[in-house]
Length: 305
Image (cartoon, rainbow, N blue to C red):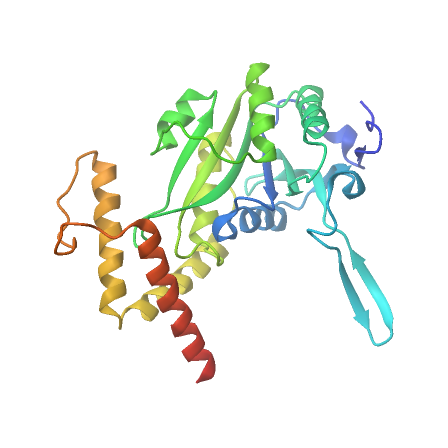
């Protein structure tokens, strides 16, 4: 199998890929709350070494006006011009198990052609399973372990990992099309969606990649080192807790989320002691707005000091 038109070209490790490996697909650009996908991708590449199996063409897939290349200017000279990458890599986990990682930007153009090529790669390398992931904001508290929802034709994985099943219509990710086409062809595929606290979703939340790497271990059997992420998560939690410790209103709103979260997981409604005088609870948007307002004000005050 060679490069198809100008969309991609094989890399040096094209002929070194064993059959039957798991494929993990992590694309940034949309639905990456807490920078979960980006952090996970960087962790896997950092610890997995890796060789390039195939490279996709940014000229064919990327809108440069939306995600511009980065230049390094030294004095009067342009020293470096970095274009976003979308690569298929052959990596190893912490115990030497090989796997394939398709990572980089979500294509802006030619989704159907991109999907056909990825499906053909799945067939060419006789991929064992395909797992992709993204992260969305949800009205959940940072004081509870993050949860997942899952879709796909691997019912054992969906039943084991998913805490939320619903019929919804939402804007698609490019990889939803890939998942759909793989299901049509009866190829094993699963989507993992990390549910990130919505009042923290615009920042970098280390708990997101920790949860995702744990789930990838379940879906693929891979073991990826997480010590660095765990240290970052402890520091992040301590910073957030310190910021909200002096504000009773924010603590009250966190408690509302905790009650809603715990009641949902138990499957039984709980009476909420934090309802207002009319018996109405604040909406998720109201909770998020108040928390974001407070945390932003706290950051501005700390910066001024």
